[in-house]
Length: 207
Length: 207
DNA sequence: CGGCGCGTCAACCGATCGGTTGACCGCCGT
DNA sequence: ACGGCGGTCAACCGATCGGTTGACGCGCCG
Image (cartoon, rainbow over all chains, first blue to last red; front, side, top):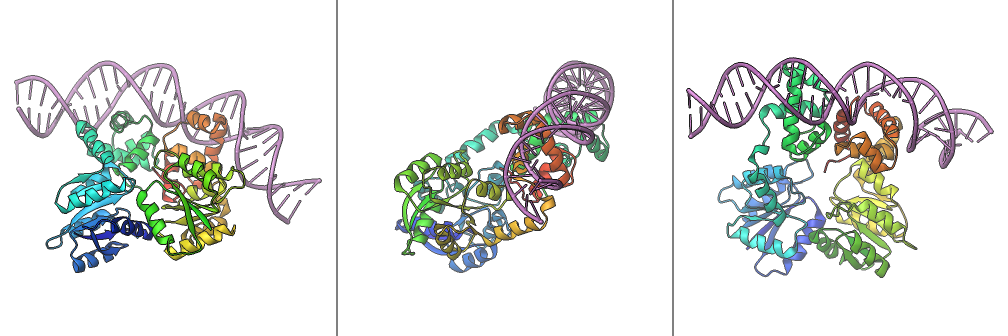
């Protein structure tokens, strides 16, 4: 099987090469440190599976690169191998066409099996990632409404209830009602915690 | 020179072993995936330099492990090798006694030279980290103190003044004093705005 | 030596926030 | 047509926060 590596850390690429060198059925046909290199290399080397990090450093998002790869003619499977397990990252990666989602902290054997499974077209998730997903399924009510996200964005800017009310043309009372709902859905109990929780889940974006 | 690796990712450890295997003057005498393993291993193997990741996964902070290592009798140098370059991480690591701070994204050659420099007791910083530090120096007025950053991090977690006080073993009054200073330096006037401002300036990192 | 910045603490005040209860309206799906 | 959900508003209370003033000890640097 032909494998292509995309990771901005030389150390990680070297580690994958070293680890996978012992697996006879896996051949590493190329590496890339950023999105452009990845797309060019993959078009040229025609791998079966791409191992993709989501944090590519140069500001490029691995999710976008994944999407572009999947738009190629007869595209390879893309297996995400990254550090974090935020549900937003997982959802976005799957949405972009990723075949699986593994964590860098997983034991090497899980990685080997995951790559082989991905090559067969199977969906593969790290244990921690899988539990996260089903927890999310179980409570679909935790999705924030558009209005609540709007409130959250102003919240992140440091606005007080009064200012949020003014900017959204509603009363302070309504803002407080929304906040209580947001707290409930995010599992927090202060405005500041709500902001960080929302950022972690990529519900809102800073800057 | 005797080197010890601390990183919770098997892939990264394998990568370091592979990369450093080509350097004749560097011998890897041990590895650890978490804080406890690290302290036991280092006490037993007596390395000259420890390569330390700050994100150790099991909830343990690499900074704390670094501090403990430096409290050992005739401690090894600790060279931090991690993914991020937030001011908070850098300052806390240096404060804990780290000899240097390198980024995983740095070219291997920089890593090799860094390890050798650390063994000689020199302070070594990645280029990006160094620029960050001098930018800080140029405008000391707006630079937050280590203590203030510590407060900011708890703030970002949604902690109230009381909880911050409890966790830092100081009184609520002191926390409020710090907050006023932080507001002044960041040019904001609420706690939530302080968090977003700090994140944007990469003074702290979420998650 | 004398500042100066940092970190610590105290007491106080008004403003704001967190949380609750209860209510009304409009839209959507069964 | 009815129920459910999202969005709106109100009034209330205790808890917390924001901001101020004033104070003390410490280490660093000129």
